[in-house]
Image 1 (tube, rainbow, N blue to C red):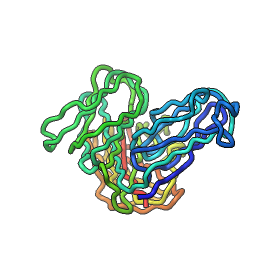
Image 2: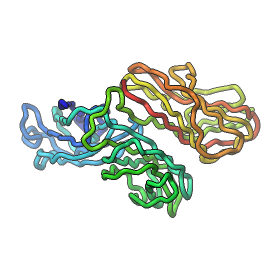
Image 3: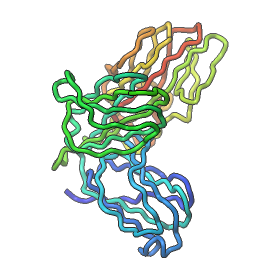
Image 4: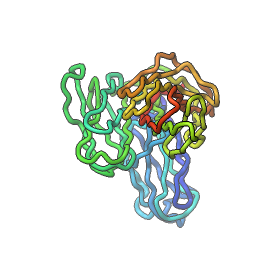
Length: 342
């Protein structure tokens, strides 16, 4: 297999650099940090702290490596299975800092979302295809403890694999093969963290078209009744009868062409007295990927629609529509879909 080299944009002042798609790079990665002309950043006048962040969906990021520009710029190789990476400049200034990322090319990386329950134990996620080398990305603010569990006996018994403490977003790397993984919440239930896992078979290169990532959609779907729509910053789409209001900031612009499949909606709390339908939109056109949630029902629902191909820079979002038009009801949900890179 050949090697792949990309540059991760570094902000010249505190802020966040543009994300870079890295699904085609194997878990073992090398970072080279340089100033202008190839000299050490400290000699170029650059200073401050850089934080490398990883994501499986280009929406939820967690930190995994911190670099001090005034210290030794040599960075040891590291292992992480990520779909996207970006650089956050936590402090300092100085332009023309180059952060290069390299590794073997691969088409074997795979990704899955683990639903975080509102309390107690969440639904199982099938991770049997993810290989042995795994990376778990935990993002978001929350109280209490998240215990990630794994099973190898078709989900009959689970053992704890990883414990994440309160307010702790991070990237966790380990080896292991499990059929299913799930999350158990312990203690406080405040906050709505997101969890995704990436995997890669040891020694695997895979077949063309296998690279994939996870797209997350989550929030509260409100039905305020006939008197109007009450926006909520976490909502993708509102519906009151057949009226819709688009929430543009949640639209996701695809950074690569590919195919979307396996839309899964987890209804965490459902006060709706009518049936709710959820499906993917591309621009303003609905696709065949639709999930139907009966009135007042919670649990995981999976689309019956086939995979849909999309082009670079296509915009995806969720559309929610309910038959209910009275009362002030809510559907609290998370939704994920697998996006396979062409």
